[in-house]
Length: 321
Ligand SMILES: [Zn+2]
Picture 1: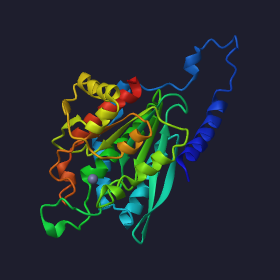
Picture 2 (picture 1 turned 180 degrees about the vertical axis):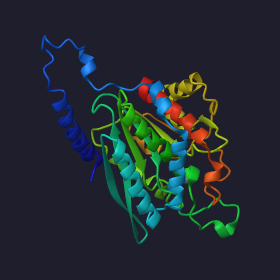
Picture 3 (picture 1 turned 180 degrees about the horizontal axis):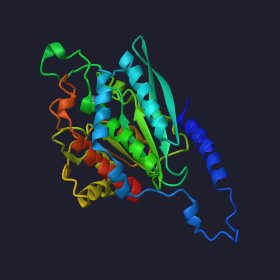
Picture 4 (picture 1 turned 90 degrees about the vertical axis):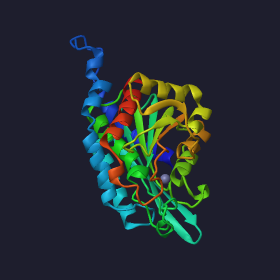
């Protein structure tokens, strides 16, 4: 399956609906209503910010963790996929799974990226991304006996997804003025080495075909109570003007966790997308002592951190760059 086919299918479906809605003649002299008023009213950043609930977002972080660790191949992974897909279907114009198989040794992983579309069906498109799988091994745990244990991934996995799920509800309530595609990547955190990581995002990037979002934002590890978000260096090195615009917007909004300094270069799901020409920033707090340990749990995260990141994303989606 390829995502272009999915997105084209979704576009056809939704354009069908839109063309019916817009079929009324607009040259009717009896119709004194301003033309724009007949189109669906788009939301504003202010309305979206009011509607975004940090507590709801945090509840969705907790809900993912209630499934337990969510590595590919586990029952919790399947249950989480169903939950996320069902949630996105409630709010999106359309949602789709992008299945892929990936061989590791003798094992075949069955993975799914989860896609959802919002706003107008054409024009400038913003990609919002996060990974929904969790790491099968706590290989950075200080205790050697824990290092084969799967992590809960409250911050590393659930936090970015939680922000995007709550944003999906906001987009339904206040349709954004530009097209938004949410993609939840699978298989980000699977392998012992980078060779078997970023599996879903690499597949997504390989199968874009001619369709390409104009730019995108990746959220990863954005739930830390002690949130620090320096500029991620791979984003900066690939697209300086775009990356500067994002961090400048955060400064204009007074979002203190976004720091105006260059942080480390992180290998993450944005890199395969940058490689195919999509300007992407990775909003990531890599200064997290519980990274890839069994201590990456709900109590290390806060609703406020999710809200800070959501405020930035809402501004980009509703006001543009
Ligand atoms: Zn990770």
